[in-house]
Image (cartoon, rainbow, N blue to C red):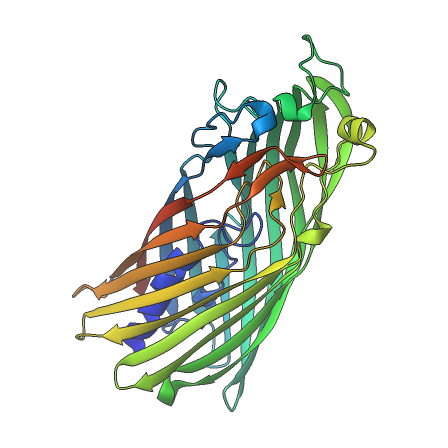
Length: 377
């Protein structure tokens, strides 16, 4: 059963790689802390290839936007050490949040030139104490660094302005948020029954407050305060038959707290925010099967509910369905190579400004591929 436990972890890599709740990218996976062995290390890569496009509203001529979502890569690394029968600790690196949106200039009249790039890195130092009778608790410190660069452009933001634009100009408007590092915490608990490969784990991730040095339209501005969301992951797996495992995750993230309102932008919009993301859940469930001592395979479904059709132009999709296929192969040396492919059907949406839809995005999708190399020693 152990072989398919690791396969389920490999497949979860693909279920959290692309277009999950809000700006999520990694899903904040802490599965490394539950791995067997005195020492365990893993390195994961993901490549996400979205195809997101639409047409301007009739008032803007109905022009094709072209693909507005760029391909991107994610990387994560985890190391776990078992200090005693009861206590283990892990260090995890991930890229929890991200955005890579760019409306081609010459495409959409309403939004052409609008772009958003958000980068993040996080280190989590996590400890786990096993209390006996299958129960354990885990928790630790999380330190993350975030930066962003956002440009608004197009007739959806008003008539074009001459260069250089004033700080209150929104067509075009640019804001740069410099790297800021801040800390939060992680805490959770789990219950396990190894005889049936059962594990249920719940993990809470705290909000983290950032203060960014800010430049608006090329001029220094006041610092911008932004809070990243608290979140809860509920992970579960259990054996249901010989060599067969069911697994899944429910994740909730509180994106209602994420408000990005630089001083100049706030003055131009009456206190508006560059972001407009609802708190939401995402769900995944799958089955893993061991076919031999060396090879296992998995299949999973994912779902994120749809919300309001009117969305930020910086995140022009609304909900999703996905199908993932994964596998794991263990070499004679003990190194395990695992990975998966995920197809995501993205929900239709209307990028909006000032409460009105400016375009219609339909029939969009993405493909994600993931690879993980792991070794227990």
